[in-house]
Image (cartoon, rainbow, N blue to C red):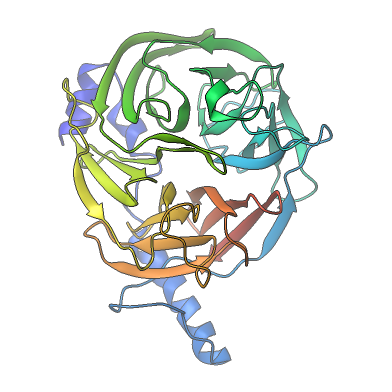
Amino acid sequence: MRIYESFSRRGIDAPLLRQGSRSGWSKTFTAVTLLVWLLVCATGVGLAQHRDGDDAFLPSPVRSVSTVPSNGDVNPYGVAFVGDNFQAGSGPLKRGDILVSNFNNSMNQQGTGTTIVRVPKSGSPTVFFQGKKPLGLSTALGTLQVGFVVVGNAPTVDGTAATAGPGSLLVINNQGKLIQTITNAAIQGPWDMALVDGGDRAIAFVSNALTGTVIRMDFKVSSGGLTLRSTKTIASGYIHRGDPVTLFVAPTGLVYDDRRDVLFVASTGDNAVFAVWDAADRQMDGGLGTVVYQDNVHLHGALGLAMAPNGHLLVTNNDGINPDANQPSEIVEFTTDGRFVKQIPVDPAQGGSFGLAVRTTEDKAILAAVDDNTATLTIWTLNSE
């Protein structure tokens, strides 16, 4: 396909890009769905808001842990899994760990959080990284197999949008040490990121809160850090503005589908999810892209974005746009052709749903999502056995 050809031209191995894809998962997911259905039938509990006969992904919560570190940082934003190919070395990270970035400090000032918390498969969370001011670690969080954690820094001076700076991308090694700070004129409040790992090459798609744009940054990757090869603005025109409650209303969640070379963009102010085609190849700004999902009944400020193993998209809602007190802090599941499937709440109050991530293995799927209201991470697990 074009994306594999494109990355081949850049020297990126196609098999590496296939890691985490949905191929080979259909039998496993069918078993998972059957298990959920049997449980539903046995207990008499229905799948709320389930329509169109689609096989839903969203399960029931099974684990909740605090994301508040020793320095008191709150407002967990980004969520990322440590992959099976991550070179942990002698560092604290283990494959399957969950990382959570904190955006606020202990005084709850937005854009001032300095920590990334490690949530192991079992046991208590620990601090993986603690940086120095000025930092505001955003939803832009990901890992590279070489052993790096990459996180967006969208700092403010006093917790208000008026004092927000352009920010940067931080590169942290597997020991939890900052090794590189990447700044660029195109980085303007890195709000979220989709990180495509190709071994010795990587692409970072970054949504910008200050400009309402999405950029593509192509990197060469080595054990010493990331070398920027090129930067392109591939999408623009999304609603973006400062907000006293959410700090920014701007394009946020990003999911990259390598099979079709399409980047999905959740834009909070537009309350919609868009598709930007030829994302890894395009050399020109594609504007907003194409609307994939726009549903004022179930969307209430589309925010974080992830892809389920059944090919559906999951989007969180910050309740800052089109709020509905009867549908607070929802994660909404929908198909890539725009059909609603299901929704579940993260918190009984509004404003709790933000970052999320999905990890799939041969025998299970794991969904992790933060609750900003309680500064916790909720983890759902589906087993095929």
